[in-house]
Image (cartoon, rainbow, N blue to C red):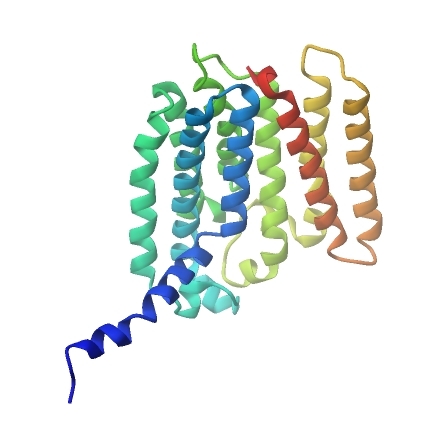
Length: 288
């Protein structure tokens, strides 16, 4: 005999599974990293606590929407490529649920972004729109790098334009962030290139192939390092020169060790990106 309490007791375990699936489908690593980085940049540039909280909330909403959109769109290809750990492809959460979450986060991103001002909000929403464009089709074209460049480049502009007086961001900060985005694109796609090609995805990295991408990954990241050290009006200090030399050594070591370990170039690229992030944060108020 079925009681009124049975369906409720059977449905309880489903909520944690659903929440876990949504958490894994949002690409939690990049989502958290980009949110924390942008909030830290806002703090370093002089935004007050409320302003930093608004920046973090807007970026988090945008990144959640991008990650959920990506997993919902790619579910069929993930199944075909046999990728594990993909909640939609594995059936841990339904595609309709993930789409609903993506559009909900996108809707929340609009007022949260505009709360920093119309110019700042428009720039951030343009970056989010570019990322959605990647998810919805640009990832399979030779222009797959453009959404990453626009999305990352919009972040220092979002922070700067949200400051009192809405100052324009320094050109070198925007360009360095865009180069970081290009490096992130190459590094992110590198492990998936064989599976992508097997399922018909032919973006810029896939057309280059794994061997060329391994060599190319550090290039935009090193270019970002050079900009962050050499482009600001004040001359670089010992810390800047040390960062530049360290990034060059890391990139070179990654290329040399890549013959023995396929993961060495990727690890080196992550290390160079970390140097770039620290340099960007150290510039603080100079990004305007």
